[in-house]
Length: 314
Image: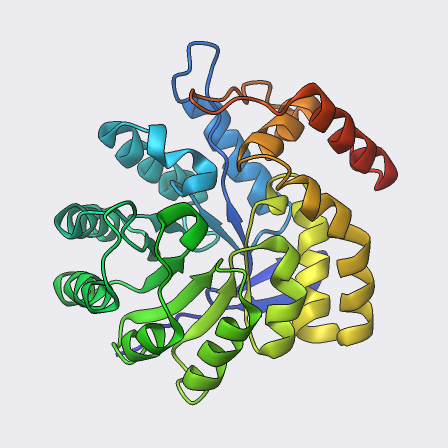
């Protein structure tokens, strides 16, 4: 069974081939002034991302404020992004939960409406053991025949999925990768070493600032917050990381590093939504945030504004 699909597209005359790698934009979700999902703006934002060269789109993740989306809104955002993309790029929808049964339900729905893959967070808050994590992801993979990218983010979930567990799960046919946001470069190295003989399993950075390092070790791309604002520059960056060689990639990494840092000055997606609102990204004004998240403090807004000015991001 071929799980890992090949996608080709034209961008500025350069033919690029990525599977579920490259720049995978972790989409922010536009809300109107009543804090309802702004469906028209979401469609416009999908078009903007495709036009700017993003290789895949990832709606309904943490960056999309999935914790504050109702169940029906979560499903609707999935539907809109898949419909609007219309096969132009792969769509990897957030379909995880701290309940295995709910994660299976979301994953089934994602498959039924035409998602190319799902991003599945490790169960949060209830802090399962490593054996529990294996049982959780094995159950999802057995119930739904769709490519699954696991998502390890211990600072969000309160539990780290260790390298031994990830390597064990990588042997399941339709578990095709891991979004690694542990921040532990030693753990990430162990995962890449332990899975490098498996051509169907890939490591994807979950942090913009670690993309260069992870790709240097053999990773295939990044599920990117920064790409919401500068998708074209992130595409140039990932091309350098994966194709052009270390020198150019290193230069771009160092250039963009202050921007990556600014995106983490407060809880994601607060900084990126502030920037999207300030710059009216894709011509969209409705970049409100749902409580309990709020825009950054005035001090951090000044810091962010300076980075934007220094990097000519406008």
